[in-house]
Amino acid sequence: MPFKEEKVSVRNGMFNTTVRRAGSGAPLVYMHAAGPPSWDAVHDLLAEHFEVIQPHHPGWPGSEGFDHLDDVIDMSLYYLDLFDAMNLRDINLVGTSLGGMFAAEVAALGPQYVSKLVLASPAGLWLDDAMPLDFFTASQDELAKAMWYDPEAAAARAPKIDPEDREAQATATINRQMALSSATKFVWPIWDKGLKKRLHRIKAPTLLIWGEQDGMNPPVYGPEFQRLIPGSKLEVMKETAHAPMIEKPEEFAGLVTGFLKG
Image (cartoon, rainbow, N blue to C red; front, side, top):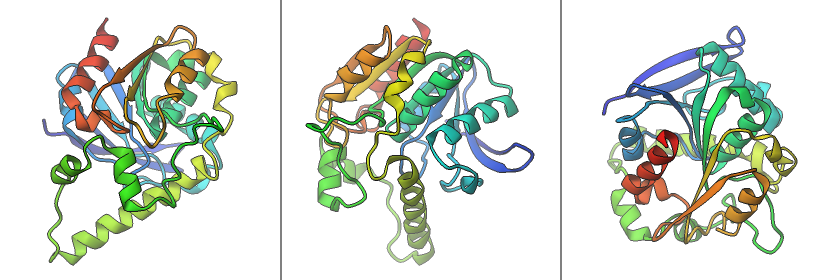
């Protein structure tokens, strides 16, 4: 399903945000993970039931205003201002990995904006006996094994860039470095930025989704989030790792749609 792309000004131009959207129905805001934002099969599947709205975080490719953010609280308040600028209320909020951390903070600080919440392998907690992978220093092989249940299938599925297209290769490298550099502000040196002290404020019905073989953010964090978010539900997807929405988009979209419409 083709998406439309627009620019949204927040705080009188302090932030200029790229927003992709497709579908119709109740608004579903999808907060992307630490890498460069992409529009994947799961977005198309969700857009069959909702108006899917995917903002690019400030500091990531396509969005401006990163210098005005000092921490995750600033990011959360920015998102509440973005929702005001877009006249969004009672949204379904979905966040994955780092985007899950942002989504949880938004739901805790602005509960009146969020109707239902889905967090897929969210960052934000820290257990000394199950430390998340340091994706800034990990090798490509370590990252692949942490991200994917089947790294070979993931590699075959990934978009291919013509090795002769130096401009496209350079753009992809710059976008990835830009995204990871921006992510450091929110998860380095450790992922714990105080989220555990605010999760109790979440009022929205919440679904947690984890990949059974997640090597980036171990599945043990699922029950910990469930313990800290009142009334939350946890689903573990088999034969997936840190990106179940990519490895099994139909199953992931089915869980999300069933929860949001239930």
